[in-house]
Length: 385
Image 1 (tube, rainbow, N blue to C red):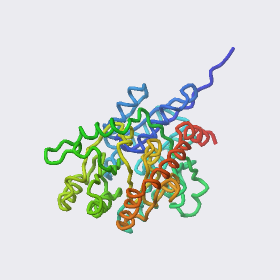
Image 2 (image 1 turned 30 degrees about the horizontal axis):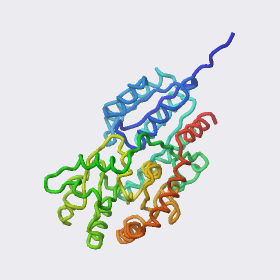
Image 3 (image 1 turned 180 degrees about the horizontal axis):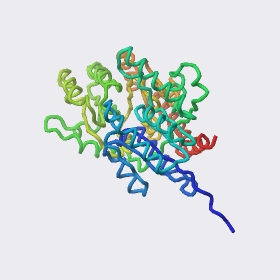
Image 4 (image 1 turned 60 degrees about the vertical axis):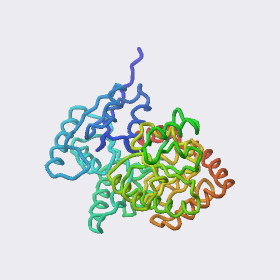
């Protein structure tokens, strides 16, 4: 008589239910883990699109209204005790925690409920954000404690691992690169047409510049992305290259501020905001060049996506970006917060067709190394180690 082996139950925990990189990671794991071997449940804050996506795939979803990115003592207490109750009900074999806030609460709750294996995936250290020295120290301490409380901490890049340089934790961290496969990538003309329909301001329509040179980015309009630096670079370059256009895909807290910067620099005919677009990566071929000027990046899915779309890249030499882009081989890297260096790199790419195409070809080949299948296999190895 054949006995079906008991499936390994995993409870995933993540703070936000938006569709950022961490949420894409959790969704990819839950959707691609072998269903005959693993049973997945998620506990998530907010009421964003991730919830509907996972419910539609048949996963059990617990939503916690009190689990939010902003810190509130009473919310954290309620979240903690609710999570304790869920873990006692579900009795998971593995608790897989994602994001900084969830890391602290989840690791303690997991230990108290004696979850056999607690995994924490780092999608970026909070101490890399623009904070005071004291705040950075506090967040680094909290991350340090989280790593100590978990059995294994997954970091998504070698750069991210190196940044947690305190004692006793390096051996508890394992690098598992993210994987990504962009489905239904559009051809250049169709991709440009879709973006043009998103920007039809009567004063400046993107469709009027269909044949021009397009630089693009897909990034949350957040201070850490330093999109203001890219806009400043474009302000310099348009004096030399009048047919240069910069398209910013996504939305965020800095939209009004960045739009004001564009007006102040008289770039209304050169910089365009599309807002958030679902599955925006399929539109990457619209761009002649991709730019990511971030101050900090744990890994950046979007760089793999740009490679799969055969789009050359200029990015900053921070965090996990060098795990994906090798300077002068698969793209150009510049120091963070260096507008002059960013401007020079963009100028080089725009004016040197041969270099741009050579780097795009190399990046396309390199992007094939970062597959979802490889990420799943390496994550299962962490679960079972």
